[in-house]
Length: 83
Length: 83
Length: 148
Length: 148
Image (tube, rainbow over all chains, first blue to last red; front, side, top):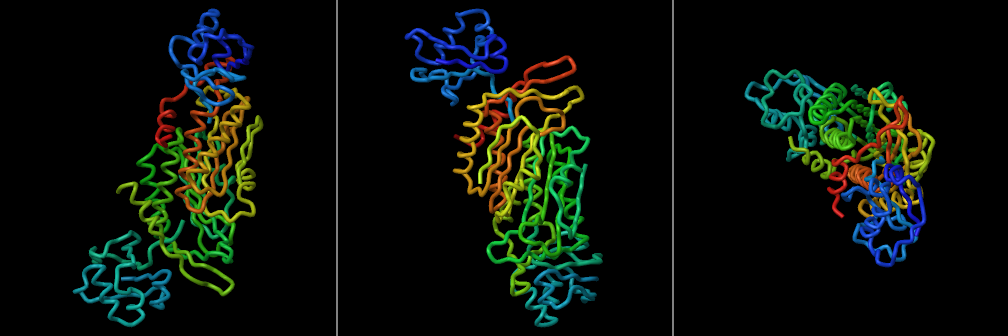
């Protein structure tokens, strides 16, 4: 699946987007975030210890417990500050 | 005191303004309206039987029980429909 | 910055807003425009007013709004005389640091102006000057929701 | 009439409102403009966004507003890229028969856009690109007041 990173999540990861191929045991957004945190310091810094970072699956807001199966695009970003 | 009439109150009275000299026994706005009603059909038609007509004393909204002594200008008008 | 005006002439939204915001560090701007509708039959609305009281009452309502919310700017323009369909009748604009205050103050100003400012609308149709517009019960209720 | 736009360029209030109201029998118009403030130190704000999701999310929020209130027209314009102090960032406009609905819908749209539309502001100062603007707790609370 394609992952997109925005704002300071993008800066800390060091990438705007990449292809992810998590193992089959990674079923939910929360599990994907845990898996990413273990990929390197940059991911650990981006996702931190709490749940500040938000996610969207196929361009819709999604909660940590939601399953990622079937999604083509996942995005990670800080709380929004538009408007 | 000077009396001003607006909108359909003005039309029914047949005057935009006039000088009023009520007797000393007329103390409140409600009493002034009763006194006006007895001056003619036009006033009776303007003020009707209920309290639809509003009043202002010296350009401030006023209730029927308020005293008219000291006021230089009294205005009568329907509920407002501006805005 | 407070701009309060009664006038016969139409006005233009951008120009009025520019005078409220020019050179000021404005973050949030809310405007309300009330327009004359055609309703398939009107040639316009004729608005009668009580000039001195209208100016005083608008000033009192603006004073009240400024006491309730931290506003940077307030603008109220109300027209009188003949107003054609599509033309604006009233403009209220508020500026504030945060949007919640600007929204609340603009709605408060309109609710109060509707029930307190001495203006009366009359329909103008092909047959000439027609019915006086009746007061709406909803307007009295809208004003009551702000307490006294 | 629904006008939803994401753009880099500034926009002009009157022209946008004209396209929302021209030829329509509009009685009440509410607008909200969010502007870039100088705050004594900013050269501007740089707004990053997630283009496809931003368009979809704005459309969803507008759909929700149109289901809650009988609106004649809705306009939402949100800018991205570098925005200079004094320039508008966002414009929301609603038209309706009665003002209460236009006010409620405009405030709802802003509260929802603030917490749901994927835009992120960053301060631009003399020192270059600076801090990301933090989300305000008040914005989350403002969105919650409308229920789900």
